[in-house]
Figure 1 (tube, helix red, strand yellow):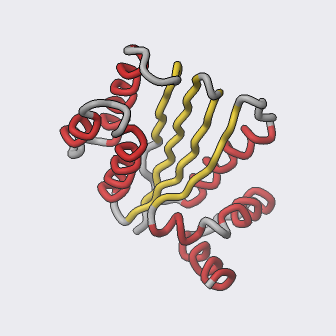
Figure 2: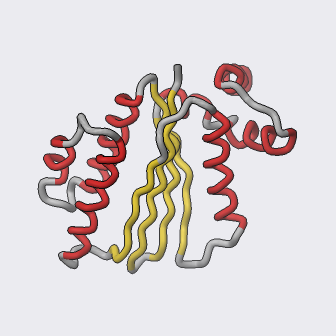
Length: 167
């Protein structure tokens, strides 16, 4: 069974506002958690002393605890007046198995883009985990089909379509 987790990371600073939409997939919630932990460590480990050690301590805890701790660590970093970030938030949805929820998350991203991003703003959508990476090329097409025709798209179909079109 494939699990998904939606992660939205927003930050604001001298360089502007940035929205990072990340769709994670994995065979278990623990796989996804480790993928998220490793990505956040890579992103922030060089900037915050003891960041990796602080995250390793809570690696066995639920995802909500992980997000809370990351937000706290980055808030402490901002409170110390380090770097250029003045606002940061990490939002994580509960794990799910319905691919349709990932399309809803992608639709949120598209709505942000359609609403007009200012010159000082930027937004990106990323795919993490074997399954999400496998279907990333067909993901926008399947999302459009789902929205246009109001149909459910199973994970097996998305993978099959990706193989037909891109292998």
